[in-house]
Length: 305
Image (cartoon, rainbow, N blue to C red):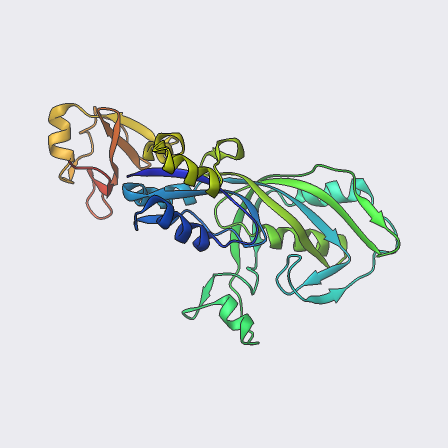
């Protein structure tokens, strides 16, 4: 069994929980997820099976789209709704739509983020969440993130009783973006403590929520021996690559991972990695040789049988 399963991860489960459960359902051990979704977040989680695990990194590199909610008035240690409150800044007067939209627009493009303490980022060989759980503090490295779009999708709701204000948003972002931190930083720019009070991922790895299957649906289809319904080909992971179709003679050379001249592929100018296909199946990913000019080498061999 090989391919990619676009799973709809429910709230309350970790990404690893999904992998563990799928290993039992599919009766195979070679299963891996394409990027962590927090337990409080539901949404699209592409999971790779068999040879599909070789393309996990390409799925991880793709942009992701989320729908969520920002709440002004207090912040938490985890930057989402599950953490302990660490700061309260009452919202005494409604923040205008114009000011909110202005700040959100300013936060598009390449931005700098400081990862949350409750995250899997490693500092000095340890995960940040390990420091946080032990009550330790450590300097967190700044990271660049790409925000392609960040838009308010509902009218802000101001609650004079709780002295909070909230609104929903959608965001299209690049690899490694912390949406929790985006919500917190939005609040800071508006002058308030804030947190991400809700989040759902609706696109990841090129898969949308409409293509996803629940665990229950996958288990039922397995019982019916209809794996073809939920198992997508690993070729989906390289749809955005320049693709080259190999002749039989070329395949005989490429399948063994040979280093070739840069003009091997009909004088194609290879600046970015390219996906090589034979008989409509992905064979390998090739790119420039890191030390030898004029040569191309395999970055990853996916099939050679």
